[in-house]
Picture 1 (cartoon, rainbow, N blue to C red):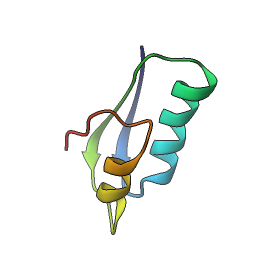
Picture 2: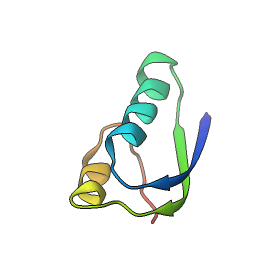
Picture 3: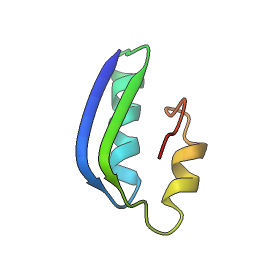
Picture 4: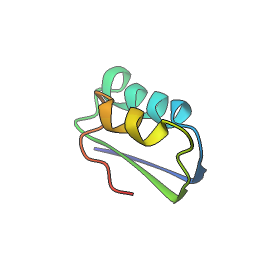
Length: 59
């Protein structure tokens, strides 16, 4: 299991890149990415929900 945290998440790409790196390059069984302020502009929320490295989204 891996945990990464951030303060503000506006766009989704760097957040998902981090999850994919943990899952697929570091062989993590699960990657938990936590943001204190999930802004998720434009289509970011939809893209996070569709991501293969994202098991469950809570925002």
